[in-house]
Length: 497
Image (tube, rainbow, N blue to C red; front, side, top):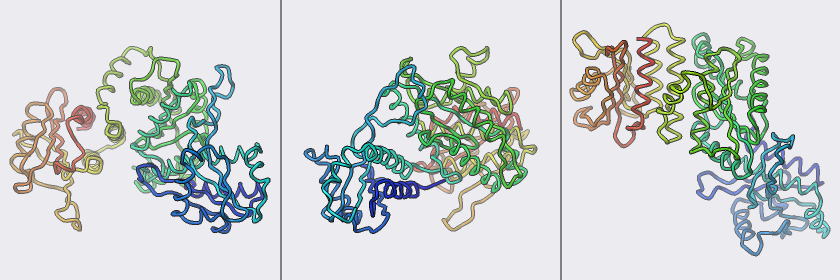
């Protein structure tokens, strides 16, 4: 997939080709929180437009040009002969007609502030250039298209990325979903969400190994992005699940998009032809004219319920969320809703972990492998210091099946087993005896205080084991809102145990 600078570089080449400019440059300011650096690119001589010759000079001129008395200017003469500065402003949003056939037209941006600044140089001081840039439809297209690219480039630049696919991760997905919902309500249009899951992906990891599985995941991510529009944000929702947001797309069109994805993936081969995939898709849509969503998670819940039904239906299945669902659907809705805490990032993490656990239980044949995979995922996701899966002995005492413990020093190797001290052991024993999740601050590693969670694993009403997670109070990424998730996870593990 192309990086933001690759895309903007191609834009500059296109500007030079279309307008005959000798050189071109683009400056995209950093966001207000300065969370990432600004972007400055040149195509041709970097000093042809002196205001954009460096990040310092670009920031200075943009600060001047965004003053109240200069905000409306369409083009500004550079101090360099033959040079011009052009603010890249998005198109003015137009609410589409209800019968418009362009429901899936490219997304439109409702704001008018410049998303970036384009500098061009013709080498001569031609007075007619100002009129041309201000009035020529071709230049209007350059300004509006450049604004869209600049905004997308900074969004990609600033969003947290999934290290395997390069797509936005779950935290990035939170920002995308919230932004697109606000935009849909503002413009009075549909927004659809597709959750995309390759069927039985765990078998690929089991057969070829994790490294090859990551390669397949990258290839699949590229294919999904290539199949969708540029204005359809795609993220890695978690595990082997992708989320695609479809602005200005009603449920029928979203189904068509899902069918296209299923078909394209079915006809493709991955890992040098060694692997073929079948997708399952869950689709949910929201219409701004309908009942507003309480929060962005509502759309995610609906797509997740639809995906669950599609997974049960098998390879190639596509399900659309509907209010009226069959018997048992009401229970499913309530059960899934309980897993959400309102913290989007945490909820996405927990749903991804739970989904991984379901896949592992289905695909893993032996307890040792399953236990190792589960503690590995919890250890990484929860910023824990120790994670262990225990079986309950006849005496009632816990016995470690698989565990991970953080090394005592930054350069040390993490340990594959550990012994629980008196307080943590008592907490886990109580959880298994009472059949309820227990948590609290315990003395571990000598006199150090750790926040600990003990989760019983119950089968047929009998406690057969438990999960134990602990970590430093100030750093472990687990709190009371995760208890429902731990219960759901333990119910999946009880199947395997």
